[in-house]
Image (cartoon, rainbow, N blue to C red; front, top):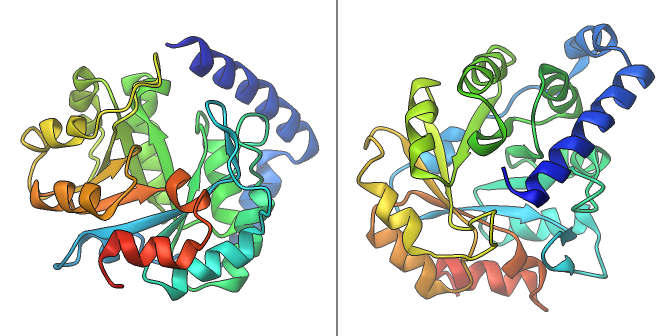
Length: 261
């Protein structure tokens, strides 16, 4: 585990302990009955046609700092929806990404697109938080979890009605991802040990991922050419945050990526 990833996970465990003190899991379980209906996150990405976009609401990152100063998560989510995104990803980690679960709640009331809670999920408690807040999907990162924990969280997310997007970087983690039963698989092009990004990483992994799984390329996607490169390699969808958030005209950046200008 990398230094930054170790720091994030240590912070997340402290955050989880504090959250349980504020709101026990039994209260979240009870609140599930009033959670917004689940929207299908997988179907729009698996549909035939050109490469699909999961557009990310992301204020900051550990490597870049603040990406967008004029950050209005609801306004950004609406722009994404109006200009062709298929799904949305919402960063909810506060200490390292300046995210908040409240952003997801607010976005849920403002848009009709399916929503992914993007965070460092370590425990079922976070799945409950996500579903109660209105998430339709959650990110599970293989590099953060043991194979057993990954399999268990994958099953628990499905039981709550959500779609797990299971991400990996290291090729040796593809086995645990597949054994967990993942149908929506993300390949992170960024090496979290060095922050080096290589778009070819997703392309190299494509041949090892079963064709009946939906594949998402993540990180390092900055142009229409990048999107086309992945589309031609058989990648189904892209998850893009930093490039869109740093763009002066977010809507134009979405249309450019999708080739709909």
